[in-house]
Length: 249
Length: 308
Image 1 (cartoon, each protein chain N blue to C red):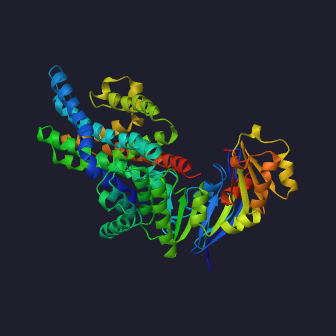
Image 2 (tube, each protein chain N blue to C red):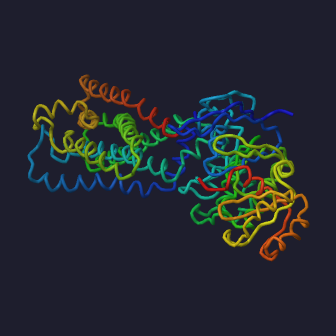
């Protein structure tokens, strides 16, 4: 309940700032889509029976979702924690530290699902989605959002300076999307990278997202969903504990 | 009368630093109780424990009838907090700051909007309703923080240095509002560096120093107990003070207090001491005679007044 009240604050701010945040979360994946899809697409033959744009589109949907959760629960959280002291203000009210952090992650999750869905609508309008199974994608994006919100929050809970967030973006987020099967099939990668991808939440998400976009829902996809849930469940307690320690002394 | 807060032997360590060393006090319903002390004396730590930002590691703390280790949400819902630094939400307007904060307390949107209007009027902020927080002056921000602390109609309001950094007009306005609250029966706990604020507002004061409570009582009681009734401020550099002055003052039944580079003389009969200063080689023109006040008590109790 407390977490929902915290979320309510964020939604109020979102009502005011959504244009700016949409700018970043929506335009960037569309630029990638245009540059890679049209530029590279002209040079690349069909992949597994899909045009390159069709292959790329689900990747951009998950990319947008990852960005939304990641930036909200890293830069956004850090600014509220360190500069705006928003959390301390909230903690003087009838909420716990856990409520505050859960509320942050809920916001990240929600933005993730929302912005991913916006990209989904755009690529669908471009005719890059083949199946109504894609209607299930927003649920997947919410799950993915929760995982990335928790991961970003975990890292943010450790750092004392906003500049350290660059390490997370460069050393975690960038490899996630460069090697996660967004721009090319992971089967082209060395075996060890393919194995490492099982720890990459974005890999699982994009596999499911692409299958749904093509109308190829299959029992095997539950493995990816299960691993996403498992990664999320494993990570979640850490940021809650660390942030609580940081806020309450 | 019921106690709103009772502390028994509160202790707190941050690493090697013992911020609180066994502090005991109780605060009665409807009272305005002030905590005085240097930075680092333990005032803010005590406040944070009351409103649930610090855990009680040693001793016992009872807040609004409940013994707490970390003040839980249902107790916090009865408390209003004015923190030391203005942590208003810069992403929201003035009115939204209050409405959203009301939402945190479970107020419905209409309720919160209504309460917001009341409080903006109470704190004289009606014409700033739609302003952004960073457009407000320091005094207006402080008023908004106080308004925010009242959104839930608290029984207890904790104010950590409510008027630090405000100009005299703004300070008097805040004091006036706090008196109104007190008249409505709200219990107030405040910390301050301003002796005038403590004198003006507080029924009772606790003087803290290095994690302990040194003295307790009403402003008047503290002055009566801890200092002679008259003070003479010696307004010349210490090296120009005639040698042996301190002994002469003491022999005459007075007291001498040196605070960093300042010299204060205290006497039961201020005029009598004053009239003898000339014969001791100190020009009375360089001295200022006044009734002793809380500042004298504070300086005397908390050592030489050096900052931590």
